[in-house]
Image 1 (spheres, one colour):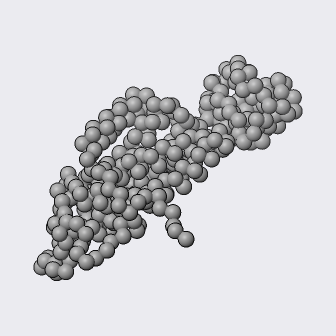
Image 2 (cartoon, rainbow, N blue to C red; image 1 turned 45 degrees about the vertical axis):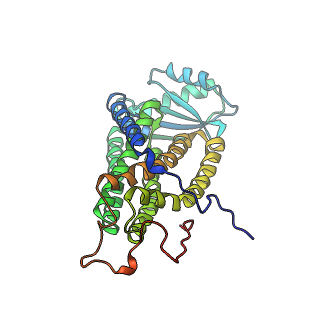
Image 3 (cartoon, helix red, strand yellow; image 1 turned 60 degrees about the vertical axis):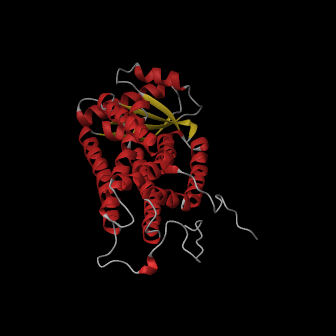
Length: 329
């Protein structure tokens, strides 16, 4: 029985040919993202901005526009309503009222009374209040988690490989996270703890792909001592292409099902992961790998002191009288 091959063994795509164009695209995306974040900011959810979140089950599916209008007439701030799991369960988000805990209790009682009169039989399943102090702590904790994850993984690559690889991985992470934050600033999708989880997943996914390619690059640096760095990076990317495509297809199928069939409450999380797969794959090939060129890495950069044995020498192509299965990953 023949195994299915997503990529032929003799695939030789010249990825690095477009690294100059990719550098311009990445620079423009980074500049636009930083500009959007600094001017428009992020649309923080209740987790980060503070406020009240109520989950209400209605007897009949309510009209969301009418419900939103009824809540806004209470003068408690702009209400955000959305379906939660089904069309009869509604998630209501309200701004944090003044007056601390007493003010929050009064606001919740007012909402209960208004909904009870307008929608008989409505049942409040939960009422959660996030204070300004708690939301500030969540912001700090979320930012610290992203920072420590990026630094920790980059240090691992620095130690596991060489410092040039660590620099490339760190810049690739900065590239991915900044562009994702810029996307959320542009679309003003709600930015909450679910999105933080998606960003942490992005860091892990992007670095996993980067480590696989870096490991193949380091292996090829030892095998092909006389090959130029550009062709060697292309060779490494092509040798791991089968694994990359298989992983991405599996991820896209799962995320596509969540995106089409999942509840609205995880919409931002699913969309962030979907985009992360694309950004993470792009940055591995066109950000992390080209950094090795810009840092002047060559096949002689990591030779041990005292030289290498003649058996390890290669001539820039396949070694003589040896076969190499480039499809293995």
